[in-house]
Image (cartoon, rainbow over all chains, first blue to last red; front, top):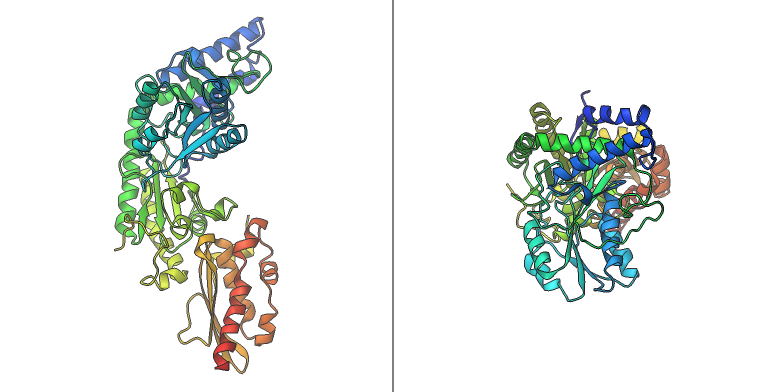
Length: 402
Length: 123
């Protein structure tokens, strides 16, 4: 059975060119970049070249890039670093209810340390309101941390407006851009971003490496102490192979961005149109226009997400769900609930996230098998049997009832 | 994550559907936790002669519903009342610990259906 991978928001395969670039720095060029001898100097050079490539991807300067172990560390360093580094100025942070747990749990931790946090709500498309953001700002606000694009429903926030507002108010703006970097163009200068988190394995580098962009002049206190690596902002011997791979992946992403975005958007729109046409009682989750090129997220009313995932897996298709049963908690995705979806609708969600390696044929196969699976599960569902009587406890106007 | 038996019942669930004018109907769970199970019974001389189910839920929920219908057919009401959720899970070769709390409601639904039958009969 041919296996189809539709879960690129979870992780991506390492590009072969990237893997090859890394191998050299594990086997032949293995010096510690902090060593003064020639072994050390050659890996230091490789790390600095990678820094240039990563910086170029987001139009930053190389010395504004700090290598990390990935998105979670980047978010922790950005948020705790700004909070601790600017405590004298204020103790208020603004974020959103739909952030990744790397941001939400860091903010919750800081609340226990005496900081106050405002969690902005989102509308039915997972979009924040600029008015809500403006109204949340106080003279104690030191940081706005709002994700670039949501990992579940793909909604892209009004990043440029947020950056402009933060700049006018003299507040630092951090964005968790883990889903966006390498998958859509980003210019940190044009968008007025002060700190930006990225993760290598979301754009074909390896797991365990990422970077935090910190605009020159932003005050960040280090949270990991040790040697003076990464300009004293992130102690620890650099993950040289990972960093070299991250640089290569950034170079490839920059080179292929336009073509990749057009291709993936084409597949995405085909899936959205196909599902809308073939399957009744659905809801497209996320923003209809302001969404990531590779993100599709639907709720299928009357059925549960894990059952859908298992059935797709039996056909060789790997996707994801916001269903509680895939997370080990009773509640479905906090993102879907924050968008106002009822529990029963949120339980039946499916995320398909596309990558450069996917094909039209894979999309056609998916669109051929999905309606049968949905119909079969609905025929088993007590909710569907009495569909006429069933009203989700929090119905949404975007549900398609054919 | 799931045993072969769970996957077998999930992929080919037995006794899916509803019984018109069922002698007893039981429903448990709620949509908030992602599982609703409804079981329909036909009873003759205190013996369960037919049983069907409808389930909204995850793989474990569908598999346990299917399994309980297999276990109960032909049993007396007293024997059926002795079937526990644990027994259903064991008959499936076990369930992941995270699935025990909300997915394993099948025996509860069965017991509700029997109670419904007894209540109706008493009228």
